[in-house]
Image 1 (cartoon, rainbow, N blue to C red):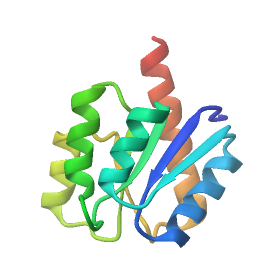
Image 2: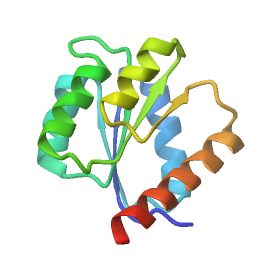
Image 3: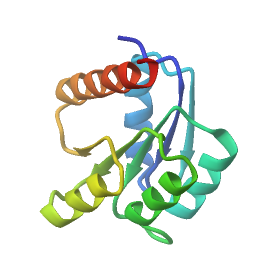
Length: 130
């Protein structure tokens, strides 16, 4: 599976953006756009129309759950995967109810993260093409 689209990574931690960006490039992403908080990320979403959004839950200025709501209100078919260092049930439920495809813990081992992204991206591709 190759992901040949544009990705938007919204996370306040530069090393996380770089790490996720490297993984998405290894999967074939043609373009990576970065944002450091939810408000900046939503502006980038409107401007760039990415095929995939990797969205951190906890950020300054505007959190990921609020940003997810804004993105889904603008485009209810947007592919958003939440990133979190926490895994409390309430946050996960909010993300799923809010329309996220999935959530991934930031401490997920690299091979597992790649496998999960491949699976999610191929499922999302199947749903949008079928």
